[in-house]
Length: 108
Image (cartoon, rainbow, N blue to C red):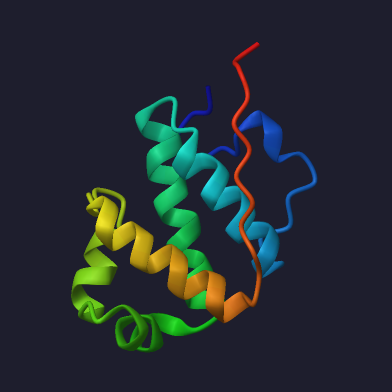
């Protein structure tokens, strides 16, 4: 379990300036949240990714959600709905021109 302000153990070699890598790690934490710290870190990664790529204005245009609401959702105490997170993820996926592949496997 990671603590506030430190990277989770599986982030060795993580480069926060590579948008696709940031997107992958944000998705990984978002869908494998095991604790509140990971969930918060996931939102922070999504926020940083938006700032690194399309910006909140463009994200608002693509998601039809106000920029202010998006900032609030992706803040430290944000609590976005599943629908809003899906819209954010879809907009970022299209902006980065990547595909998302989902793999489900049993826990070890």
